Image 1: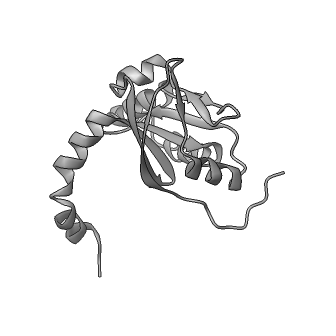
Image 2: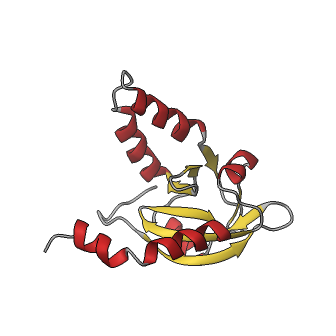
Length: 154
């Protein structure tokens, strides 16, 4: 039975891991603890933006799905986004050790070979190739303060 206290558990932090020789990725214990608190047994993994993967709990996936399916299918941009986002989706159930198997087509999309970084981004977890994350972080950190000035209101 799922019981909600009205407060959504969020994902935070950056964790470096590797894909094992059987192609499995262990989810960090901090994130597994959040899944447990959320009664999240089923996860959804799909193509993310900036060539990473997005991992959602089932509840968050349903919320995103509801938002995206309300977009007009008569607009080409909406159709394209929905096709790529949903066609890439995979239902994932972690094993008892908290490992997940990332489908090959998603590993190819995100250029994941062995080393990955899992990043908690509030309502989702992003899975990056370590090289891509390092590149992204290096190119973005210098503009962090400028971006904050532009998007955060006093």
